[in-house]
Amino acid sequence: MLPPSRREFRDIYVVFELKESDLHQVIKANDDLTAEHHQFFLYQLLCANVFHRDLKPKNILANDDCKLKICDFGLARVSFNDAPTAIFWTLLGGIVPLSYVDRFSRK
Image (tube, rainbow, N blue to C red; front, side):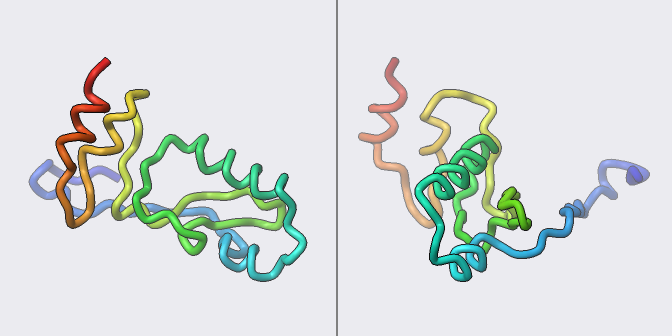
């Protein structure tokens, strides 16, 4: 459903599939998680190519098979570039030190 014009375009709704729990609940309920479980979780998160900036177990939805979905994208940025400089251009409540910009801007 498209708005009549760009000026009237104000809201975006994001709908997620229903997941049984979040990663916080999975970790809390399972004392027997192995290193392989943790590696599987990290693999799924890193493959998303998103700089989330508020990533925590409560912002990661999980199903019974431990398939993860990142949610709460209020502070997120998508990575379209392989350059590591994209990480440092925006910090919450702070300023990027010039030493970081210089170090990662040089090729």
